[in-house]
Image 1 (cartoon, rainbow, N blue to C red):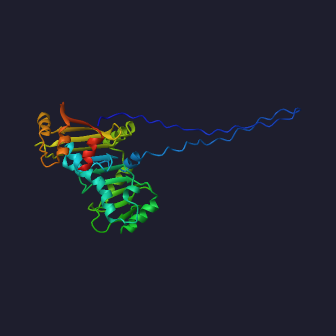
Image 2 (tube, rainbow, N blue to C red; image 1 turned 45 degrees about the horizontal axis):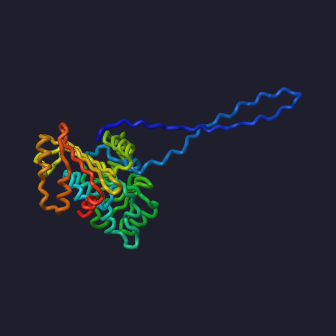
Image 3 (tube, one colour; image 1 turned 180 degrees about the vertical axis):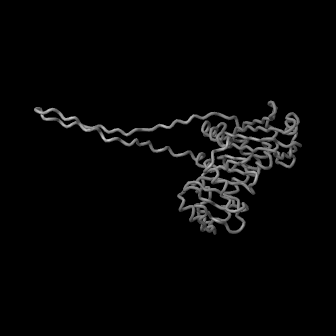
Length: 323
């Protein structure tokens, strides 16, 4: 992402009070009115945070790979990763976001609302050098008490750790569910050492990373952004024959139901060779429709970076939904 500057304005509203002078008798000098009691400035109620910013408040400042998405879950993450040459590390994170819903759906009481009815569509996912899996932050669209009851009926047990309520899973569910606020939950990999909360509390307590600051700017400038994901290398890439120093992908709406996607790859060796390898990718194991779509991504060299772009109308986005 290109770094940008963001100016924030905070407006204070001072509460005033108009006084009325009492009429003085005509035969007496009007007394000097006492000084008005000092008024305590009152601030306007703060505007509620956007959902994306409420999630980013808990983003690990040491994250080396970050995904922000509100892309429809009908887009198959594996198909998207194949089409846009996403390296395996970031592709796994793209799969982990919808996997939260799928795993919750598998353990939930059939009589309860499906996860999409109580989890908002936005998500922030991250991983660091020492993470054992993907952390996923999601907003709640139902009251916290209702969601806790759903988790309880799914067989999870509540515990209080470091001031957070955490629901511990039974069986193969791969995340613990931590209520970091009344409206944001974090899915913490169960394999993390200890409580696994330290990346979240670091996000709350420490200054934001440059990556987080830039991501906030992107989402402020273009709230319609469907996907913003990037990872720092060295990153293994199976199609290139060389590692990447960095990979980034951005998607935004195109013609209402379509998607406009741009990817940027920074190879650690030869950009021209990388662009050629991407154009010659082996797609023989994919469906004909998906292979044809992947071939439409135009990869060009811009200095040390390989850039790929594709505008997809709704009919081509449907190909991604089919997987």
